[in-house]
Image (cartoon, rainbow, N blue to C red; front, side, top):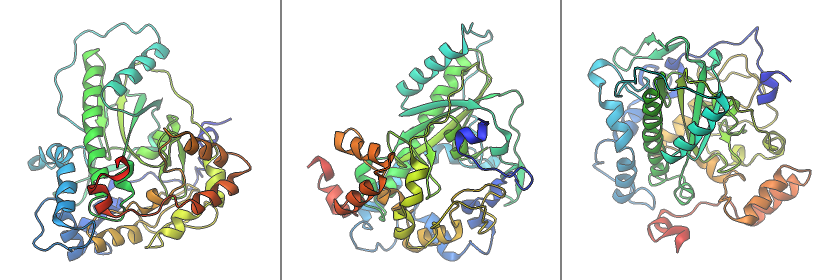
Amino acid sequence: MSRDDDAGFDVDASKFKRFSQRDDIYCRSFWDPTVHSAKSDVFYETYRKPLKHFRGVDGFTQNDYSVRNASWYVSDIFAERFAQDDRREGFLDEFSVFRGAAEDQRDVPSAFAMSNEIKRVAKAFGADLVGVTAFDPRWVYTHKYSAETKEEKPNELPEGLHNVIVIATSMDHDLIQTVPSALSGTATGLGYARDTVTVLSLGQYIRNLGFRAVESLNDTALAVPYAIQAGLGEYGRHGIIITKEFGPRVRLGKIFTDLPLDHDRPRRFGVKEFCDQCNRCADACPAKAIPHGEPSDQVYNRSNLVGVKKWSVDAEKCFGFWVGQNSDCSICIRVCPYNKDFSKWWNRLGQWLAGTWMRKLMLRLDVALGFGARRAASWWWAGGSKN
């Protein structure tokens, strides 16, 4: 089986084009008149400045915006630290804040043993899931995006970093249940904060061993393909990785390194077959940005990969809804039947059913039992599921 078949990728090499980060929907919202507007400026402003007027409805009160914006504080510190040098680390640029490396490389008895050690350390630093895969240049951005010039700038990833460590941190289940709301954006902000601490700590550990490490979140390369290749999960209809442990409720980080490591294999547990029959995310998307039907190589706009047959989201429609409600949206995550607390045996049973010929039964049960229904933000403030 080829590497792509193993990961479930369908890439047409004759049509495939690597992606420039300037075409990412968030970058486009600053330079592309098709996406940028006065409303999108206000949308970003609400994450950093107190609102003059709050909507006064459940989930969009001053309390809700306040806790959401506070959750972004840690990752914003690193993103804004070198803004004067045209760097937004973790989002447009790899991290550059680190201590020096050890002069002598530690002896590595085997790549297998080193991989196990890295995973143990990564989890001690806050990762929920860790996988390792080979460097794949297809997923590396052709160029980075300059927030200052609004043009492309070089993506100068050092040569010889043949391994990629991918980490995933889970997002709070109760907060995601309040989507769409300003409050629910707290789950995203906290995810980025945890990712930042984890990749920076893990990267410094690798340098302490005498090897090179480049820590990355949204910058440098596409995270989802690397995460799938590293065995963290499968690709879902909503364009998000679905993990066995947390469903789609994760944030991703990655480290490029020359540390000798053994590679993980992609994991398949029936997601593609289930998504073929499930359209809950597509049906629930208010912007109609998620496709029904089979995976295809359709390109909606310049924010889509070219030459890859998959379920692709219309990012312009998706982001337009975000701007309209003044907060990010994760409705597709909330309603996904894989978005469960899998510490409970009955949810693990449901996941098992989703991977068998009884998946239609599981889907009917999921709907009948009310999974994926929105909870009021006031429910979370009152204690949520812990009450």
